Amino acid sequence: MAADFLRILFTVLLVMDPIGMVPQFLAITSRYDDAARRRIIVKALLAAGFVLLVFLLAGKILLDFFGIMPGAFYISGGILFFLIAFEMIYSRPGTRSVPSDEAHASGPLENSGVSVAVFPLAIPLIAGPGILTVIIMFITGGKSWLYSFSLLFPAILISLAVTFVILRCSSLLLSFLGAMGIFIMEKIMGLILAGFAVQFIYNGLTELGIIGR
Image (cartoon, one colour):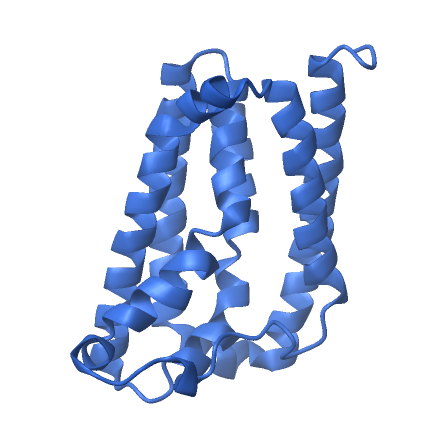
């Protein structure tokens, strides 16, 4: 069980990529003071956590409703992860852009940081398609729904906590590592995620009986 939990936790952290969020987070919150940034982070994590919890509870129901076999979702998820890893590896510094300040209308919601917290920070930076795919894949591919839930739920909580710490220390982290340091770390994480992606595709092929175990 410990090995399964560590594998799920590592996958969630890799796909969520809190280190890669640092430049984007600083860019979209540049006009806010430190207190406002903290409120934005909390609101974003609460919104993202709600979305992830919905998928955690309803992921299997969605697959059953649409008649999608877990093996097929493993393959599609593996392809998606490989595309994410490809972008992480081959992107150039500053190319993973976010909506500009002008894209957000001013007003009460903007001043409180709600609109920025929900989009683009909560969705799609934290609760993006990659992490939603991870949830559905593991919730349908485990020994049982309860077993998968018992591993995924704490893994997501830990990942959100790590994201909170990293975003709170984003300015310090950027000063310590520098843009190039974060850029290099993202490449390393992309390489590891690419390996996970190929493994997921292999697992999907074995689940569907296309290749032998």
